Structure formats: structure tokens, C-alpha cells
Length: 452
Ligand code: UDX
Image (cartoon, rainbow, N blue to C red; front, side, top):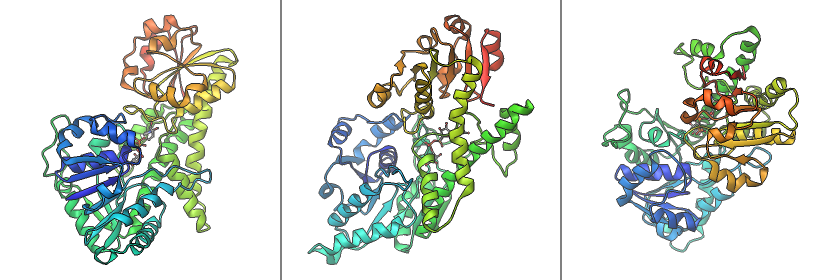
């Protein structure tokens, strides 16, 4: 099938590359001409494991453009995957979405086109996009042959494992009020639903993956599924962090508690890792948007609100713990291991490290940091913050009064703490992700502290 994708961020580019890998002809559109030029040159603007490899395998089916007149007329399916950044009220900014919808409406030509909201958009956006398209089509002289339907196809991919999640998803959700649109999307996703494609060598199909469940719903339900899924995952993390407070007081081990409850198949083991809490572009934005949408209907969502509060308290607890251990923070040096909001990505959006670094700097602490991938981005965006970036963990720990493990990159699990401890002014580690080996560190002479 012929597909156009508007927006080449994490979601748009991954979706485009995967659909091209399935054999569809995909045109990726982005208003950022530098990005398009880079893509033509085979350069991927984001760090995402295996994206480059799949991109090169699918290249024959991919084109890139900044022009709607090039991408849209031939397309049978158009995905809108533009950014919807949060506004101060918590409601997402829909400017890029509306621009995309209007431009699509001006250029669709086929007798039936499915326009798919892939961006995480407020409930009701499907109807809104439909009205924008209708307006744009109505303003055209050649409108008679054009027919379209709007669908919602929420994205559940995680950064750092986006390719795996796209090729082997737990489910695909499609919402549309027009049955024809559901049929088109079913055909588009068939190779993934039936798992009939030949997996790339570097991303083999897990043995447990069979046919992928497809859930077809109305538009509003698909839109709400996305918010409810992200809110639930955020709740799970905040829940284990709340239990972590109790665990700390009663002398229980929160990792064991997490394992113990997660083995109950009704609860499930994932998203129960306690620590500094969630960051990233989705959980914060989507929980805020869900609360904002509910507010428009006069509803309060105390559970979701509490999850947000608990998450933000975890950042404060890092500072409290350091204060407790070091007594005086002013004039101290603290090293941060990890800047990205999670391992295997260079994404710094709502990264806990930024908030923690700022809180420490505000208290007169000298902050040093390292990240295996995200330092260049950090320098570009947060260069003026005053964080001293180091080339490796060894440089970070040098002369530190404490080191905080913020992001659980694999590189940090295997550090030689016997050697590192000697370089620190005071060998104190705050393991913000319950990821280091407490016994090994203690043997190396490091005082090990965790958040719970
Ligand atoms: C999330 C959703 O998982 C995905 O389905 C959605 O489409 C986009 O948002 P992402 O933000 O990429 O994906 O990362 P995810 O793996 O969900 O982690 C989010 C944050 O939660 C990270 O900061 C991670 O460190 C934190 N986390 C995750 C925990 O603190 N504990 C856990 O047990 C799991």
C-alpha cells in the first residue's frame, strides 16, 4: 500500500521504517528540511537501537520530503505523527496537528484515504481532525472525487525498544467510526498481525510471539485506551515507589516486594521497579492531558493526580537522602551517572537527571555527570545549566562527595567500584534505580544507599 507519514520523530520515523520494511511504499514528511536532507543521506536524527539497521533494509521503499504535494496525493493511508507538546495547563498543544490536518485536506486525491492519528491526541481529536479535513477539502475546486475517513491508531512503543515493540507488539488498536477505514488498516497491518514477515537477523522474533491481537473500536475508545494505558503504567511505578516508603521504614527489600507481587499473574512483573520514578515525553504529558480532559467534564482523577505527586516526590527524595547523608550540601560535589530518561535512548525530555541536577545546583552543589549517549544533546539544550560533563564514569566520581545512579545503563552495572571508590572524596553511592550490587559495593568500601 502507499503510505505517508507526517512527522519523523520517534513515533513517525519508527512507524514509517517498519511499514516500509513490511513492503509498503512509504513517504516520510517533515517540515524540518535539514532532517529530510539528513534522512536522504541515510543519517538517522535520533538514537534508537536497530532503527538504522531496519531503515537501511527498508530504504528501497522509503522516500523523504518536506512537501505535502509530494507525499500526500498518492497515499492511501496518511499517518499524523507530529509532536503534541504540553502547554502549561497540561493540555497538549495541537497546533502541529491542525496544520497537518489542513495540509492533508488540501492534497488528498484518491477516492478513499484513511487519515490516522498516531500522535497522542486528546479524546475527541479524531472528530476535530475530521472537521479540519472536511473544511480543507471543501475549499478545493476539485473536491468531488475525494473521500476520506479518520482513524485513531495509538502507539505503544517504548523508546529504546521501539523497533521490537513495533514488529512484535502486544496488540494493535484501531479506532474508527467508518468500517471501511478499519478494513484498510487491517490490510496495512496484516504482515505484523499474522507475523508473516521475515524478521531481521538482528531482531529475531521471540518464540513467545504468535498472531498479534487486533482490537477494533470506535474513535473515542481508541483515543482513551492510549491515555488509560500510559496512566496505568505510571500508576504501577508510583505504586511501587509508595510501597517503597513503607519498605524502607519496616526494613523490607522493595525489589523483593516488587518481585513477590509481580509473580501474581493478575498484577504482572513489569513496571514495578522502584526508584527515581518515571520521566520521558509520554507519562508526564499523558497523565496531565488525561486530568485536563477529565476536568473539561467536571471530573477529578485523584488516583492519576496522586501518581504524579508521588513521582515528583521521588526527585525530592534524592536531595533529601543526600542531605541526610552529607548533612551540608553547599560546596559539595555530586556526580550523576546517566542523563537520558531511561537507558538505550538519548531522549532527555522530562529526564529525572535534569530536575535533580537543577535542585542540587540550586542548593550550591557542584554537579558532574556522564551519559553513554545523551551528552551531546544535553550540551546543546542544557549547556548553560552549569553541569560539568565527563567523558566516563571514572571522571565523574573523581573528588565526589556522593554519586547518584540516575539511569540504569548497562555500562554502569559493570563498573569497578574497588578502583572508583579510591577516587571519590567520600565513597557514597545513591542507587536511584535499585540496580547496583549492594554487597559488591559494600565490599569495595562504598557506602550504598537507595531510595527505599
Ligand atoms: C512509554 C510507554 O511504555 C509506551 O507504551 C508509550 O507509547 C510511550 O510511553 P517510554 O516513555 O518510551 O514508553 O518508556 P518506558 O519504558 O515506559 O519508561 C518510562 C519511564 O518509566 C522511564 O523513565 C523509566 O525509567 C521509568 N520506569 C519504568 C520506572 O521507573 N520503573 C519501571 O518499573 C519501569
